[in-house]
Length: 290
Image (cartoon, rainbow, N blue to C red; front, side, top):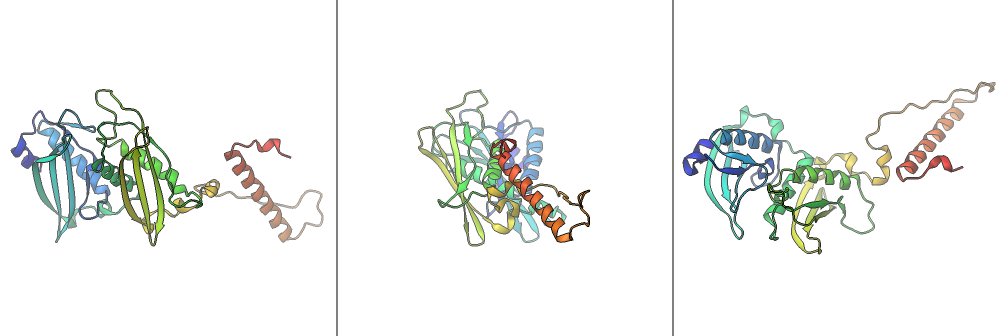
């Protein structure tokens, strides 16, 4: 594919933005692990032909490599385009297409990974962007429940981290290569269950509150780690190791109490430890309470 692109535009001396955010599965817009494999392979091949690879877009009409992949019969067919970006429109100045025998590929590359949904949303935000400034700075907030009154889930804060990782590979949302950054905008979003799917809605607003871009994407609940669907109030108990708490007879206890009494003591200890943990997470000095 790199040779085909080189024949069309002569890659030598070109500066091209390439990121794993730029590639997704055709028809689904899923950013699968193969997107990273494809991005790395194309970056190496295009660089060998004299081009400079960047994460941010550079220049007045920057070049960007984008593409899709999908199964066609026994092959995985890959389409890529060198896209020249413009202020009002963009155009593809070179295209290439290749097929690989799917049987010889690692099938783990094509299994959805939940954190990569953030990359799909970032690319959709880039495509829907209506602002004039590029390389904008973002303040990213945890996602919130769509409907008022619903308890926030752990997925909100975790997805904020996924978005931060995805933004690092964004052409639009990365810092300017010339060190010039616009005023900070906000990236916010919501999530809502819809049948057997989770709907994610994210948006970018400027400091004045004007919406610059928005994107929506649905994810199967089965593809979301179950621990992220728990309420934030249970955070103290998520991702923890196993604690063994036991109670034996006290030295001055004779005869030893029944097993049920010892079990109740152990349960009370567990409750006290849990209350202490929750209190400390909330910033309360539990030692000061009697």
